[in-house]
Amino acid sequence: MSKPSIKKGIDFIKAQIDAPVASFFSSCVHCGLCAEACLFYTESGDPKYTPINKVEPMRRIWEQEYTMLGKLKSALGLTKPVDEETFKKWETMVYDGCSLCGRCSVVCPVGNDISGMVRKIREGFAAAGYAPPDLIGATQRAVEIGSPMGVKLPAVKAQLRHLEEDTGLKVTLDEKGAEYMVLLSSMEIMNFPEYLEAIARIMKQAGKTWTIASTAFEATNSGIQIGVSDLAKVIVSRIVDAAEELGVKTVISPECGHAYTAVRWEGPNLIGRPYKFEVKHILEVLDEFTKAGLIRTEGMEESRLTYHDPCQIARKGGIVEEPRRLLNQIASNFVEMSDAGAMNWCCSGGGGVSANERAEEIKLTAFNRKKSQLDALKVDTLVTACANCRLTLEEGLEHNGMDIPVVGLTEMVAEHLVEEESVS
Amino acid sequence: MNTISSDMEFRQALEALSLEQQRYVGARFVTNVLSLSEDARLQQVVEAATSEGDLESAFKIAKRASLEAHTRCGTEGDWNDQAGYFVARGVEAIVEPQIRTAGKNPAWKAAMQCRMARTCLASESDEDTHDLETGAQYQLLNDYLEKVNNP
Image (cartoon, chains in turn blue, orange):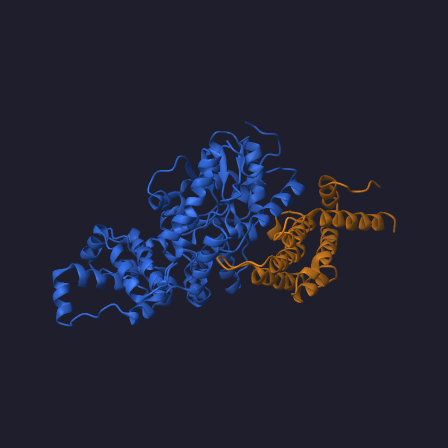
């Protein structure tokens, strides 16, 4: 990242104002529905967290620079210019008080993609030097080391040795011509290594060849979270280069919400061309394997359980039915939360919020929405498909004295695999 | 009695134990890696698991310890600290209430977490310390079974 400045921040915001953004600002009817859809507003009650207010600096720049009335108002000194004070004041609203969950965009009656605009305004804040230090550090590590948490290849190799010794399943790095290239998130490598074991067992039963790229094992993209497209492009390019070099047909995005958005949806736009391979979320792959009879499960979870839809996977990714089909195969007492599926409520830790230590208080306040949903259901187990959601949920539950185990869906499916040789 | 020398035998032997025995053996596995954590609360939990201690309170302490020890998303990880996280997860496994475990063997779960704790130490290099822990666990179980079968 080059040296930040306020001028650069304003220029970056200007550069993000395209026709859709201009039409969004023109068409906002100030109805307030976005506020009621945002857990940072509903749980804190603080109007500053109203989604459309989070992009107010961008609206001001649009009005002052690109509208006749705005230009006139500026000339007469009737509008507040966007300056250092503005960046200082809005930084926590833009980063700490928004998980980019996209619920505001879905409820907007005129179709404004407010969440998308928050993502865009972050470009300007990062360029102005008003971004959370934790996210800056994570992005630097992602670019320099390849992982926002500083995970290096020896750590992945150590886990693969662990996997092989415990299960007898061998995973080959950089295997050319493998059908699938599996990506991992640093969170899975560091905190939830059971995910890798689950993948190995599932792939073995499905009879599929797979590999991990030594140059691109990391799926997450903190360039997206902080809002620096140039860096996001560098990170996604590693995955594209590795997948094309290895000649894989499909890249599997792990149980990580924003990683899926980054590689599946933003990636081709960032590199400026379509991929030569497919990108699928692990839940899509599991669903395909199940439908094709490549994996078979046995036994049912009997505890009362529910599923938390990760925003980037369900609302933004459209993966809503797949986890339900999988759960209905292995759980006899699966119940839905209110607003399940595409209208789910965020765990409160997405979009870089959980990586941003100073956002802890507002994150736990926003978690009260999930707490209410869970209080109403009285479940014994909570299942999800995002490592970041998982830890945010665990922390929120612990903070509220709620004893509910949180389990990854891929691991749960692997636990129920019929123990036999490949059925393919 | 045959000496345990593979994970299959190891797991079968653990499955044959009662829940109390599984907790006890799990506590021995955890004790073997306890020095990798600086959290003094974990020792108390291990003691509760092997005595008539309050398992419910012990579980709450262990759960809090493992949550506090995890690496937050996006923060720079330290594999030595991360070893402590897996030790805490191992400790959590041996005092986890039965309603949460759904019949899963606490000793096996603890064993896996302890091996991960040891693996963490090798994560900055290509050094392989994993099988040392596996061997140590076989030995601990062999010793225990020997004692139980030949009191």
